[in-house]
Image: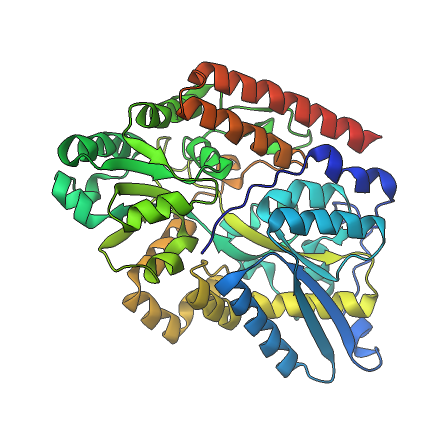
Length: 457
């Protein structure tokens, strides 16, 4: 199951690494020293590659299977050792400590939210540089632009997306039928809000729930066509200095969802989404907003008639769309040239059409290699598994714009932790929506400023 675990490490704690050591690699391509194929070809013996990741359960098993397959294909040349380091927060904390002790892994499969920090800390070779130096390996243009867009900072692709999830509107068809709601009408946020009230009015069942994670608040902003951070979602020449959830259509969207909770139409989904899933499976809630990655959990539960629909939008077409989730592959700048090329070979394998197809079938993540769709076995799989097709269609149909790219900043861990705290206060009636969003906005300004101050120091 794809449960997003909030990273509650503060920006100050993460930035210890930035002030404690120099950065062996910057965020751009100028003057790149990315090694080419000869670095591995000239190496003696077996080149060892260490990999740290945060994929647990079935996802971790699928990842290890990919590692085993790669090692089998490269026996006598490359040996990859993958180590699970805990959920994303634990993984990032351990990586931060490893920077200070000069013991980072060759490859880090880091959570999406860490992109700003991992770029700023400068411990990785940009993926764009490795691709240019190794043209016979991974072709970045084969990867879904909606995914690479997220990991592109200052115009340079920093990491390689590996496992990509997308937010969905999951509906219990039995509950919708009981309430007289047609799922084909659930395309906009206003549609969903109205349907949630109808479900409760007609059946007495809760109409709506979602995981108490700020990723979904970011979705309510991006699908309104509004940047989560200013300026330019932190992706331009200037770093992010503020968030926008206290204004515009994003604020209207959050207010509408808050009203569902405050009126008893919506129920708490829990920070890990477990309550939302349990209630959904038990027929106690009609619709939930969760990641595409919960498909495995739903399949393993009690059978019931459910469907995944595209995430509801509120902004103009072509300018609005959801932000991806998942993890990206970061290649160490302090590894030896042979290890770097071997690590790049591993990243090439993980994102190949064949490996992406296998991993997707086992986990519910969306294949990020566009050539996967050409596989006859993938076409058969999608025909037999229409939900997987829905996930893929949402990803491919998302416009590649600033709003859907998401905000990139090393302060995002602190910003999002405070945001969801304030959002929960608004949903539960402890604060008005205005009070909660104003507090979140002020806290975000302080977190961004603190991060930049430490980055400069």
